[in-house]
Length: 143
Image (cartoon, rainbow, N blue to C red; front, side, top):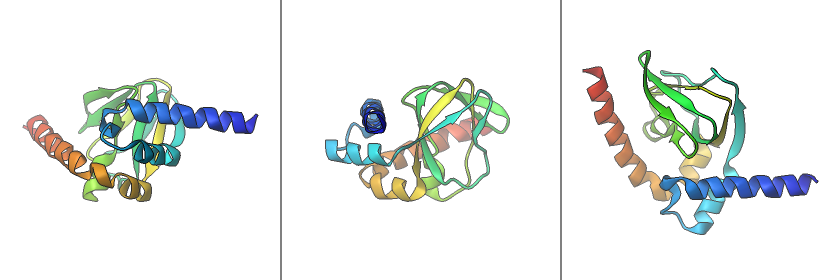
């Protein structure tokens, strides 16, 4: 039974990785490596997943549920299945730019800082472009 569950869990992770637009440019082998490194974590409604100002150690992909992004006490975005967060602090080695809290029960697939840098190499230029977009968005919010 354990083997069946782990196989099914791996298939679910692989399926989700295949749905995330960020990973579409990866080869199937690269997507499998990302999928195998992901660890599922569950959160109850209202739980803080990351806190603005904290040092970032993980990258998150939402597998189930919804979350809100809060910057300087103001909700600036909502996240759902297939959305990801936490990459900016890992890319820039800076504190978290926002807080993310679960709105519902939430299942996230998580990559550690080490696995993120090891596995996301082919995506770093794309992620850096996104980081520039976030900076522009943050500048607009702060005005």
